[in-house]
Length: 276
Image 1 (cartoon, one colour):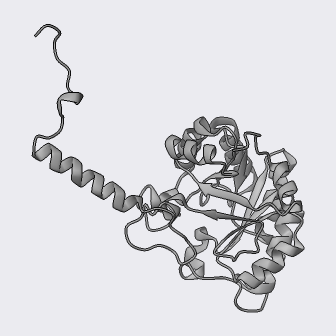
Image 2 (image 1 turned 90 degrees about the horizontal axis):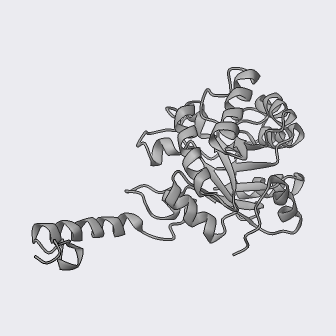
Image 3 (image 1 turned 135 degrees about the vertical axis):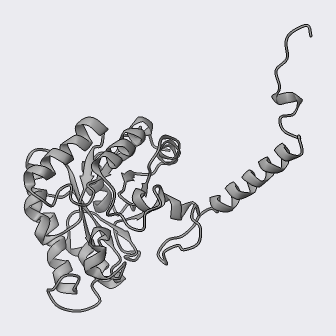
């Protein structure tokens, strides 16, 4: 595994060289260390933690304190990967000053190296101001989970023509606005592969896809989906590379059986007073 530290400037080179970018979410020290040493390029402390860690039914309840806490944990494990922290719902939409304050906290207090925020045209001024004070920004357009109520759920965006929210031409405008505002990359979530391919070809900055087809410059998955660490529903676009839910269940069941049967602790797990 290459040990060279990944910086935001490396991502532009990877796009130019057509080297796919691998990004995963992480929320704690052990998994962040595993992914980092495996060679994952970007670790995202996503507000998805509200659903996969906290058990909420959306990302909306996540607070700055929540994200900051998890960013600190991942920062302690990260050696090579670029660490990006999500700005949660209503931590950046009220004003540019609020966005500056909270984004700065993720870098200064948490150890993040960049922030991610949702929105295109409407967030361009905010992105520009963050970049002006040297806070690297990753954009996020398409299916934006913080807009779940407006979208009527987690629905694929960009299937219809038009410049209204979620329409094809509007998403093209959003992508260009994010790039022109100075973002170093943009997540394309839940949009048709053909549209994602067009956006990728038109932007100089890398696109990171999730449910956006294979032509993006990189891909991102929520770690719980990738590891099969979920009970029941998994998004169509997610691929499970393991089944840790099953493995953990089997391990807990075996532990319970050993405790009930007094097979654990065995002699090799036991201490004795010397000479007795």
